[in-house]
Amino acid sequence: MPSVTEADVVRMRDALFFEGPDRNRKVSRFWLMLVLAAVIASAGVAADSTATVIGAMIVAPLMVPILGSVLAVTLLDRDNLLRCMALVITGAAAVIAVGWLVGLLVPTDILAATNSQVAGRVTPRLIDLLAALATGAVGSIALARNDISDTLPGVAIAISLVPPLAVVGLTLEAGATDQALGALLLFLTNVCAILTTGLLVMAIFRVQRHVHVSPGGNKQLHRGRAVSVTLIALVVVAVPLSITSRRIAQTEGTESTVSGLAENWAAEVKWEIASVTTGRGGVVVRATGELPEPATGPLRAAIARAGVGGTRIRIELVPSHTVGLSAE
Image (cartoon, rainbow, N blue to C red; front, side, top):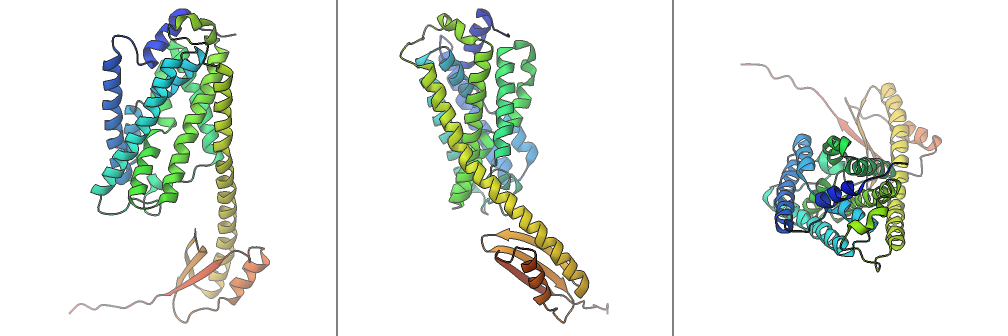
């Protein structure tokens, strides 16, 4: 079985805990890097720039207090657990505030309908939880094993922490509370995944054998209760993720069916399907072509026969014609 030495635990404490003579320097560095990462992430999301958002992921230090919470629970270090949890909560609130302020500076609302960075973070699914669990495990292993610590930049990119919080602030400023809640759910999913896999990795590496290394060790901190709370939180976030996953799967299936039927109908009437989209009002089929407008009855009948007649479907016909402009 893999295990860590006392020197490894001392190294992990120095990397994750905000204590000792360098405490103030560590705290100031955390806040400096976090605020800068929040500005970068918010600007990147507002500009719909993937490269900029990735830069914010690498700079962001939120992973440190989250993994610090894991190590504190493992070492029964109540003081450092409270300190790390406080940094996670206040840090998250600060990033949301920065995102909201950046939203005030942008002339247009930053919403999922017009921004791919927002769209990719407001509807988290179970697959996002699976990816977060795997990535959190890699991050914890890289922490325990100093020889593979070079994977940490990749972990920072793979497990998104600051960008979802920036999206929360931007969408709140735009008045899209539902999108803000979706992005917040993604952040909580990632945090719960890091905590869960982190505790598992710490147990596998038998870090708990080195409780004596922690001067802040406190028998009043029950490791079992902390693990139970973490698992319960993971289950709680998995419920809305399951609902979202099912809804998205149904939506994609309906869109695919309607799109195929619409293409067949359009070929027969010599029109073209411009788009098939799903919104709050149901599925919208947009078709364009030359006048006269074709009859939509056959398409409606085909949709009903396909078993999706109960879905609200609207067909928008956009007639088109060409006008020649002669040069004088």
